[in-house]
Length: 178
Image (cartoon, rainbow, N blue to C red; front, side):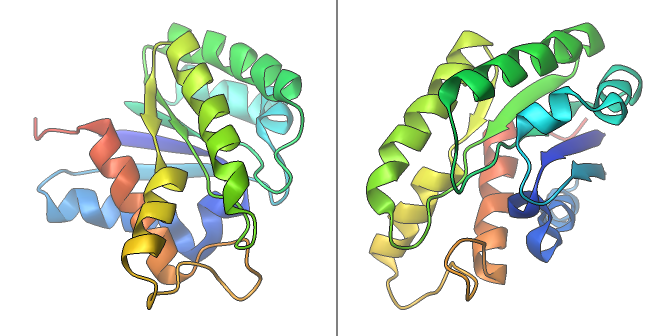
Protein backbone atom coordinates (compact mmCIF):
# COMPACT_ATOMS: atom_id res chain seq x y z
CA UNK A 1 0.00 0.00 0.00
CA UNK A 2 1.06 3.59 -0.57
CA UNK A 3 0.28 6.82 1.30
CA UNK A 4 1.12 10.38 0.25
CA UNK A 5 1.34 13.05 2.96
CA UNK A 6 0.82 16.63 1.76
CA UNK A 7 1.42 19.42 4.26
CA UNK A 8 4.06 21.40 6.08
CA UNK A 9 6.18 21.18 9.23
CA UNK A 10 3.26 19.77 11.23
CA UNK A 11 3.56 16.75 8.94
CA UNK A 12 7.34 16.44 8.69
CA UNK A 13 8.29 17.25 12.31
CA UNK A 14 9.81 14.16 13.96
CA UNK A 15 9.32 12.34 10.64
CA UNK A 16 5.70 11.64 11.53
CA UNK A 17 5.01 9.83 8.21
CA UNK A 18 7.67 7.26 9.15
CA UNK A 19 5.96 6.82 12.53
CA UNK A 20 2.74 6.16 10.60
CA UNK A 21 4.55 3.64 8.38
CA UNK A 22 5.94 1.89 11.49
CA UNK A 23 2.45 1.68 13.02
CA UNK A 24 1.21 0.12 9.79
CA UNK A 25 4.02 -2.43 9.81
CA UNK A 26 3.38 -3.22 13.50
CA UNK A 27 -0.17 -4.06 12.42
CA UNK A 28 0.96 -6.33 9.58
CA UNK A 29 0.41 -3.79 6.82
CA UNK A 30 3.17 -3.14 4.30
CA UNK A 31 3.02 0.63 3.74
CA UNK A 32 5.20 2.92 1.66
CA UNK A 33 5.05 6.63 2.45
CA UNK A 34 5.94 9.74 0.50
CA UNK A 35 5.67 13.29 1.72
CA UNK A 36 5.37 16.58 -0.10
CA UNK A 37 5.88 19.28 2.50
CA UNK A 38 7.05 22.87 2.75
CA UNK A 39 7.38 24.62 6.08
CA UNK A 40 4.83 27.35 6.71
CA UNK A 41 2.79 26.61 3.61
CA UNK A 42 -0.82 25.51 3.31
CA UNK A 43 -2.84 23.55 0.83
CA UNK A 44 -3.01 26.67 -1.36
CA UNK A 45 0.75 26.28 -1.97
CA UNK A 46 0.27 22.62 -2.89
CA UNK A 47 -2.73 23.36 -5.13
CA UNK A 48 -0.45 25.55 -7.27
CA UNK A 49 2.44 23.07 -7.28
CA UNK A 50 2.84 20.82 -10.32
CA UNK A 51 4.77 18.25 -8.28
CA UNK A 52 1.73 17.83 -6.03
CA UNK A 53 -0.61 17.44 -9.00
CA UNK A 54 1.69 14.91 -10.67
CA UNK A 55 2.12 12.84 -7.51
CA UNK A 56 -1.62 12.71 -6.85
CA UNK A 57 -2.53 11.80 -10.42
CA UNK A 58 0.28 9.36 -11.21
CA UNK A 59 1.68 8.17 -7.87
CA UNK A 60 -0.77 5.30 -7.53
CA UNK A 61 -1.45 6.09 -3.86
CA UNK A 62 -4.06 4.31 -1.80
CA UNK A 63 -4.34 7.23 0.63
CA UNK A 64 -3.60 10.94 0.42
CA UNK A 65 -3.33 12.86 3.69
CA UNK A 66 -4.03 16.61 3.39
CA UNK A 67 -2.80 19.07 6.03
CA UNK A 68 -3.21 22.84 5.85
CA UNK A 69 -1.18 25.55 7.57
CA UNK A 70 -2.14 25.80 11.24
CA UNK A 71 -0.65 28.91 12.84
CA UNK A 72 -2.33 31.03 11.68
CA UNK A 73 -4.81 28.94 9.77
CA UNK A 74 -5.77 31.84 7.52
CA UNK A 75 -8.99 32.49 5.65
CA UNK A 76 -11.42 29.65 5.12
CA UNK A 77 -11.99 30.74 1.52
CA UNK A 78 -8.30 30.15 0.70
CA UNK A 79 -8.37 26.71 2.33
CA UNK A 80 -11.62 25.71 0.65
CA UNK A 81 -10.52 26.82 -2.83
CA UNK A 82 -7.25 24.90 -2.49
CA UNK A 83 -9.00 21.80 -1.13
CA UNK A 84 -11.52 21.90 -3.98
CA UNK A 85 -8.73 22.01 -6.56
CA UNK A 86 -6.69 19.24 -4.93
CA UNK A 87 -9.76 17.05 -4.50
CA UNK A 88 -10.47 17.15 -8.26
CA UNK A 89 -7.09 15.45 -8.74
CA UNK A 90 -7.72 13.01 -5.89
CA UNK A 91 -11.05 11.93 -7.40
CA UNK A 92 -9.38 11.33 -10.77
CA UNK A 93 -6.67 9.25 -9.08
CA UNK A 94 -9.13 6.97 -7.24
CA UNK A 95 -7.10 7.44 -4.02
CA UNK A 96 -8.86 7.90 -0.68
CA UNK A 97 -8.33 11.35 0.78
CA UNK A 98 -8.09 12.15 4.47
CA UNK A 99 -7.92 15.64 5.95
CA UNK A 100 -5.39 15.83 8.78
CA UNK A 101 -6.90 18.21 11.37
CA UNK A 102 -4.03 19.91 13.16
CA UNK A 103 -3.90 21.35 16.69
CA UNK A 104 -3.78 24.93 17.88
CA UNK A 105 -0.87 26.68 19.53
CA UNK A 106 -0.31 25.71 23.14
CA UNK A 107 -1.94 28.87 24.52
CA UNK A 108 -4.84 28.95 22.04
CA UNK A 109 -7.01 25.90 22.83
CA UNK A 110 -10.17 27.96 22.29
CA UNK A 111 -9.51 28.07 18.50
CA UNK A 112 -9.55 24.26 18.25
CA UNK A 113 -13.33 24.17 17.80
CA UNK A 114 -13.09 26.53 14.79
CA UNK A 115 -10.21 24.54 13.32
CA UNK A 116 -12.22 21.34 13.77
CA UNK A 117 -15.29 22.92 12.18
CA UNK A 118 -13.32 23.86 9.06
CA UNK A 119 -11.78 20.42 8.61
CA UNK A 120 -15.10 18.65 9.26
CA UNK A 121 -16.79 20.89 6.70
CA UNK A 122 -14.22 19.98 4.03
CA UNK A 123 -14.35 16.26 4.83
CA UNK A 124 -18.16 16.34 4.58
CA UNK A 125 -18.13 18.45 1.42
CA UNK A 126 -15.73 16.08 -0.32
CA UNK A 127 -17.09 12.91 1.30
CA UNK A 128 -13.68 11.85 2.48
CA UNK A 129 -12.01 10.75 5.67
CA UNK A 130 -10.99 12.98 8.56
CA UNK A 131 -8.19 12.38 11.06
CA UNK A 132 -9.27 14.48 14.08
CA UNK A 133 -5.74 14.87 15.44
CA UNK A 134 -6.39 18.31 16.97
CA UNK A 135 -9.36 17.05 18.96
CA UNK A 136 -7.52 13.91 20.11
CA UNK A 137 -4.57 16.17 20.98
CA UNK A 138 -6.57 18.26 23.46
CA UNK A 139 -8.38 15.22 24.87
CA UNK A 140 -5.00 13.66 25.57
CA UNK A 141 -3.64 16.83 27.20
CA UNK A 142 -6.65 17.00 29.54
CA UNK A 143 -6.34 13.31 30.44
CA UNK A 144 -2.52 13.34 30.76
CA UNK A 145 -1.37 16.83 31.80
CA UNK A 146 1.97 15.37 32.87
CA UNK A 147 2.86 14.51 29.24
CA UNK A 148 4.14 17.11 26.80
CA UNK A 149 2.74 16.93 23.28
CA UNK A 150 4.29 20.23 22.19
CA UNK A 151 7.84 20.95 21.07
CA UNK A 152 9.58 23.82 22.84
CA UNK A 153 8.08 26.38 20.42
CA UNK A 154 4.52 25.69 21.62
CA UNK A 155 3.33 25.08 18.05
CA UNK A 156 4.91 21.93 16.69
CA UNK A 157 4.68 18.42 18.07
CA UNK A 158 7.07 16.76 20.46
CA UNK A 159 7.94 13.19 19.53
CA UNK A 160 4.98 12.04 21.66
CA UNK A 161 2.71 14.51 19.85
CA UNK A 162 3.84 13.24 16.44
CA UNK A 163 3.22 9.68 17.58
CA UNK A 164 -0.33 10.66 18.60
CA UNK A 165 -0.85 12.24 15.16
CA UNK A 166 0.45 9.14 13.36
CA UNK A 167 -1.75 6.83 15.46
CA UNK A 168 -4.83 8.98 14.91
CA UNK A 169 -4.26 9.04 11.15
CA UNK A 170 -3.77 5.26 11.12
CA UNK A 171 -7.00 4.69 13.06
CA UNK A 172 -8.92 7.19 10.90
CA UNK A 173 -7.96 5.41 7.68
CA UNK A 174 -9.31 2.09 8.97
CA UNK A 175 -6.64 0.20 7.04
CA UNK A 176 -7.08 -3.56 6.93
CA UNK A 177 -4.57 -6.20 5.90
CA UNK A 178 -5.06 -7.23 2.29
